[in-house]
Image: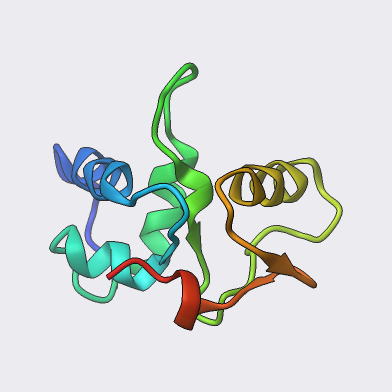
Length: 105
């Protein structure tokens, strides 16, 4: 069972995501581990969904461990994520990123 949201939990996640350099991606699980949240990968997406308007957190650098974009193909947010990644030099082919090539750390 997942823990209730504790103060600062979302901010820890956002700090990890801010550290992902341009041209690199991290998986939800990787972000959870680095934020000290163990195996709470599913929480990462929820935390990123709570980002305040006008933020500078590069949420689009977080993808599934398989390299797949998590949003439905063709949706507005999918297109925005692919466009943002490609603008940084990350290749997205058929909704996937080559994790061996673009994974952070």
